[in-house]
Image (cartoon, rainbow, N blue to C red):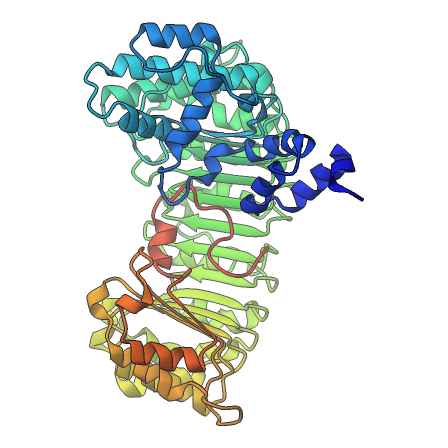
Length: 569
């Protein structure tokens, strides 16, 4: 069939199939008029989605396009206030009507980028005029979009942005009624006027949202703050309730919930309120992330009710004194992935209890609490199906890791090696550790610049001796200066040169530095690079495991569920 004769429904199916292939979708626009009008709405559902890794170079173009979509009245108002925009030029398409996803932080930063590029030396562009412009853009989006699917508001990373008064937008209720993903982020009060004002506006938006009776949210992210007054409401009987708890209760089928708090808040009242409301979602909730939340007896006992939970993340949490002697019965939750990090404000007994909470279905474990003998002794019999382990090695941890040999299904091992290990680690220790690795291992990543080439060599020597069929090896360094040619030479010594030579038939080598993707040519000599590429099919600086520890402990609110491993849930 000629593409000109394809009906719109067929084109829609093609574009949906190409959902993550932006270049191909852009090509679809050029086919003909029918393809153009069918494809454009897909590209503009989340126009700010092309902004990644804080690269806002394309943001001004998006804002310029939206300026063309403003009403004549709004354009004239902005021109009157000194903005240099055209009052006659208009857009080819009603782009605001297509938008389905809005992250206010990204929108505000995009507007800021447009200001810097357009009015870099224009002194007349003051804060008042910026606020006017921001309000015009948001008003247009809310009044003309056909219901949002995802909306995020708040200070995920602190930027000095003013939020508009969302309650003044007439189309807000219609826009929010069908929300499926919502993020609300309050920022810790530091008594700065802009923070207090934005928190107040977010709070008022939250109040209004509750009146819209949104029932279809399945992905909810919430960052609390220390100002209790903006977190609570009074009902008609004068009873105080937490707004987040009320929102949770309204949902028909909440699947994912993330709580992002701070240990300094010690807000057990809010924690208890949230868990009471989550019990209503006990059958639908599959993903639960808790950061900086306070655990008491009621909350911990309530955790056992979530029978369909698949992913549990507990980071930087704390306890009250009544939980000191509380113990779980082992194997009470059928979760597949468990992240348990930096919970130093819990007693050892409670941390042990948490690590005994999953049952034999657990496949992925990320934790820094492995120095406890009771935990390591339970790994082999409690988690026989574990295939991914990511852990932090402290002090003489390598000496006491013989338990790892019992994880006979383990395929992925990620090690973040503390600098204090160097005082204890010898070549014989690392060799013995290598001999204890399960032969099922396919992926090994080491996140430490102090892991010397000689230590790495002894580890690889042990892998060769016990015939581990390692497929992917990853090394991560904090600083470029820590890398030298000896690492590549050492790896080449143990990499297979031809079939049947008994060495490691490595399929991929990953070497990363810091958070930057420095070209390999800048790190190694041309000779060594050629030798590696001759014997390893893939050699890349793409290192997804780098900074694993800080990746989880840091408050990276954009981090989506399950990105700590290759294992899906």
